[in-house]
Length: 214
Ligand SMILES: C[S@@+](CC[C@H](N)C(=O)[O-])C[C@H]1O[C@@H](n2cnc3c(N)ncnc32)[C@H](O)[C@@H]1O
Image 1 (cartoon, rainbow, N blue to C red):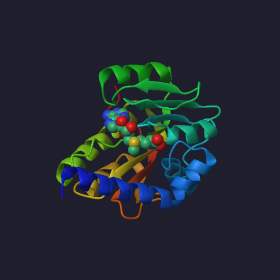
Image 2: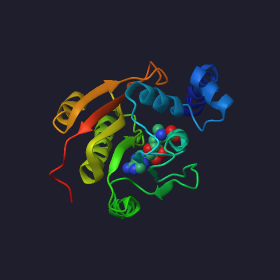
Image 3: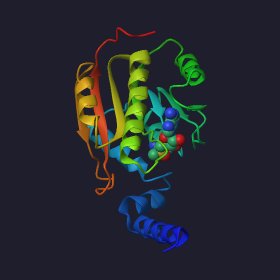
């Protein structure tokens, strides 16, 4: 079979799965940017992470499914959304176009915070998939570290972190490490996350004061 027909078979399978998918249909029907909206909704319902006055840093925000959910909830706080790709966001959201972890992006986040800390860091960042599982897992864990660094840099004691990860090498050890800097850290899989995917979410609450701020 040629590469092209293999690709078109797998993209038509993807299309069929999208059409069957309950959360994709719900997202279309309700006018949400993407099904990702429901993942955050379900995580928030379970862990009560987002409040009207929350100050939130959202990493990996494009195309804007989570941003859209956050904008409805964070009516009195601050929302900073970061991604190199275009984000559909409202006027109150501080959109930063760039890669989390880059110095210029860090400077823009620091400026937007105006010397007041964050309550919550969210990351749905995902690397460009190479198809080589070990490489993709290592890249995903690097992105998890970028989100954790954001906590060390800007989070207030008691704050929370929720991020996307993939079951695989290094994740359990990473979550164990997280338990030293947060009162609690768990893995969770919202119903809206496809059951056949290795995707899971890490939720950590009760950030302990950082000694490495700077
Ligand atoms: C699964 S998508 C996010 C979906 C989004 N949460 C939504 O609800 O629409 C993953 C995103 O991570 C972004 N990303 C990957 N590496 C990043 C980085 N270092 N900084 C910021 N965003 C990054 C990608 O550009 C991509 O848009």
